[in-house]
Image 1 (cartoon, rainbow, N blue to C red):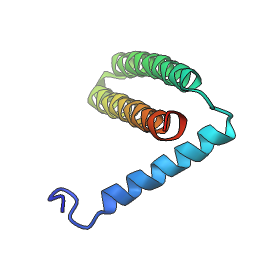
Image 2: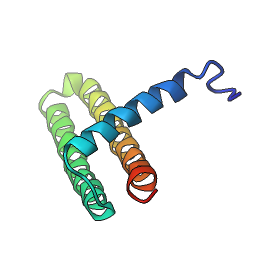
Image 3: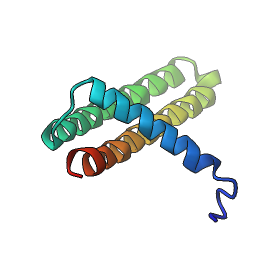
Image 4: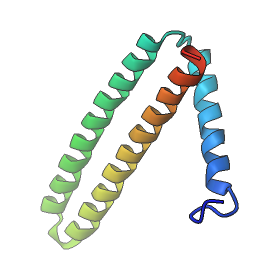
Amino acid sequence: MNPLDPFGRMKARQEKEYASLRDSLKGAGITSPAQAEALIASAQQKGNWSVAIGIMVATLLALLFPEAGFLFITLGAFFVFWVIKMIRSGQKYTRRYIDEELKG
């Protein structure tokens, strides 16, 4: 039993997320490890651009509206952390797909 997830809810949610991604990758015709690695690289690049644009927009809005600057910086930080989390979990699930479905 995991003390951080005593009822197994997180594990069940992660399994559901992986199953959804696996079905999407199969539906998209990702049939080789090279295709999956290219997908990971593409997602990483798009994530990097999203983070850069999010930081620029939050900073610009904070400069244009200094009275609400803290709000824009906070929302920008939440956006950046969310994008990073989504990209990392997508990479983790895609690597799992490579290991279990394509190599296995």
